[in-house]
Length: 97
Image (tube, rainbow, N blue to C red):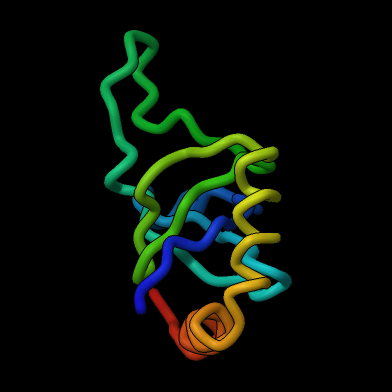
């Protein structure tokens, strides 16, 4: 089973504009946020900042979510058991550079 996991943006990586450092249950990894790009009138490409929450699947941010949704999803995922544990272990073993 593949899951979308909520993660909190810790920092936008300036050396790689499509990457952000994200924390998922204390595991910190670089995540590709390029799918969230939009053209904003003020020239910004991303509407993301540290403290924002995103939904992550296989190293890619799929959407920006609010903190309440992230917390509810994390609680639900904790109840899923092995599938969630397996996903966290895969995230911990991954390395996007």
